[in-house]
Image (cartoon, rainbow, N blue to C red; front, side, top):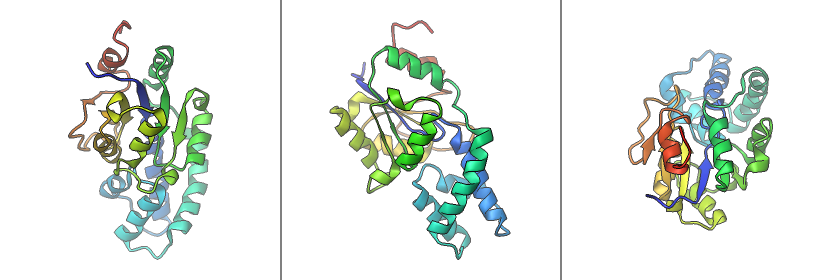
Length: 221
């Protein structure tokens, strides 16, 4: 039985349904330029820090726009979408409550900027129960590099092997695996075709009974 002492969540597509919203933003950006968003481009951008993701879009379609222009435009589009479409992923509320009751230290590591993450998580009153949030703008190397999860382990004063990480994408899961954490993949409709080789578990959703068996074995499910 692994010696699990803390739990770290990715945000986009793991806690919040934002991974399903970002393609709408990308599609609108490209539509304004007479272009269409493909699934291959969506997959190539998913889970990466915004500057990296937008550089992928620029290279993919040979756009003349700068990263800064695309970021500003996306923020305006995203703000409108958030007001009507932002929500929590299935099973998160129940699992988060159970982990709090079990006294696990909890944290979030996201490719989004820290300010954006705090703002979005704050809408659901999640941040007060977190030890910390690490944003993609606070590390030198974004996911799939393991830096962000190694930084989390350092802040928690634990070895990576003592930390469970929940990730929804191939990019994020690779970061968790390469950091040496106990990586649990939770694919959504947006990432079911991703590769999660090396993950300790591939869960159906955050409702998956195997998650509770691992982290809260005395809890009836």
